[in-house]
Amino acid sequence: MTLRPSQPRPLPSLDGSSYYAATAHPRPAAAELQGDATAEVAVVGGGIAGLCAALELARQGAQVTLLESGRIGCGASGRNGGQALGDFACGIEALERRLGAAAAQQAWQCAQQALHRLRQRIAEHAIDCDWRNGALTVAADARQAAALQAAMRHRQQVYGATHLRWLEAAELRQHVASSRYRGGVLDPMAGHLHPLNYTLGLARAARRLGVTVHEGSQVLQLHGEGGRHVLRCAGGRLRAARLLLATGAVPGAPLARLRARVLPVASCMLATEALREPVVPREVAVCDSAFIPDYYRQSADGRLLFGSGAHHAGAMLHDGAERRRRLRSAMLRVFPQLQDTAITHDWGGWIDVSVNRAPDFGRVGAAGVYLQGFSGHGLALAGLAGELGARALLGGPGSCPEFELFARLPHAALPTRGWLRVPVGMLGSLWGRLQHTVGG
Ligand SMILES: Cc1cc2nc3c(=O)[nH]c(=O)nc-3n(C[C@H](O)[C@H](O)[C@H](O)COP(=O)(O)OP(=O)(O)OC[C@H]3O[C@@H](n4cnc5c(N)ncnc54)[C@H](O)[C@@H]3O)c2cc1C
Image (cartoon, rainbow, N blue to C red; front, side, top):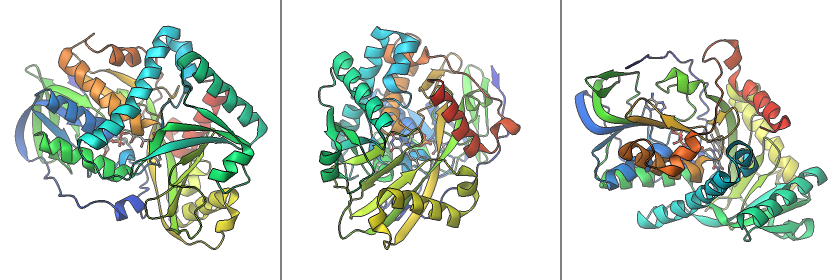
């Protein structure tokens, strides 16, 4: 088996000045892969999915080497809104349509399990990442409010999600100091955290369990040789009996055919100075129910962390000042009282959006698996996906029913080159709107 190298087009850097990077716990740099090395399992990608897979593989006694092209957490895992939610980007309704009622029940349990495992991991590995329970999904108009209430009732009636609670506009105002919303759903089991410190904590735990981590080690080529996977990086080669790919949205993913199934969509965030009067309590993270949502929460040091999607991706992608200006306007639409509040940081990242916005898991040859397509809902789910992928990899086909459940989902592909992928953020936004309009 030979898997062809791909020549991906680099995405614009959205590094900016990340609040998370500025408040990250100290971390040792991991050496680049040099020379020839061997491992039982090679994991590609140092985000939440790859690290949780490595943790589970090591827990099961496998000898694991993880290759990360940049630094641990440099992808979406270290840049995101920090909101850990118990649902899917496509909504459980889309999974009902595609998989049937019984499988959708299993998928729902997985989403709840993903949250539960995230909290367990934080406790088990003593990860200092400012975890807080509580998330609100809010509606900006009557149509959104009706849809949100109907979705909540569906989850209560069909999935037993009796912990979800509807808040009328007046009660919502006690949580969120904005007159913009008509109501919202409170999920006390969801929550929020500092995503980079969570990801770095996972990496520390993986190293403690014996996982070898190489940063600055982009996998440039993959091929099979003598029944082994051979991963070539600039400085060396790794041979491994098994392979797990968790490469997110960036186009450095080694397999063109996988890259074609996710489109990178930009989302950007800002941090304000610490607020004298908080606009949202520490206890809840907030996300609106627009297709490309505004999302925000209070940081441990009292700032507002505010994110917004790719409405204006073209301008936001290439011009940092423009990005900051547009993010600030989005924030002021929700909280006009922050007119004189200083913006201290802004940054962005790339989200791996699949065509139907459902997770995309599968196999690569006989001894490989991949995990992608979290479509902006991966903070909790990517962790569980890593664990499921690890079990499916060690146990072989059919060994992990939850992995197989997601692997059954059909996914479409787009060309990996040419005009259809340019400009990435704009097209991603357009594509997402189209999917939303036609019901995913
Ligand atoms: C701005 C933003 C806000 C978001 N907000 C939320 C939120 O509030 N809640 C939520 O649930 N989700 C959110 N998400 C999505 C969430 O962050 C992702 O779903 C999740 O982090 C995916 O994890 P991952 O491990 O699959 O990917 P990543 O974290 O992207 O990790 C993939 C890693 O693979 C590495 N890699 C890629 N190719 C190669 C290669 N060839 N060789 C070696 N390494 C390679 C990359 O460098 C990267 O570090 C957000 C995303 C962004 C960008």
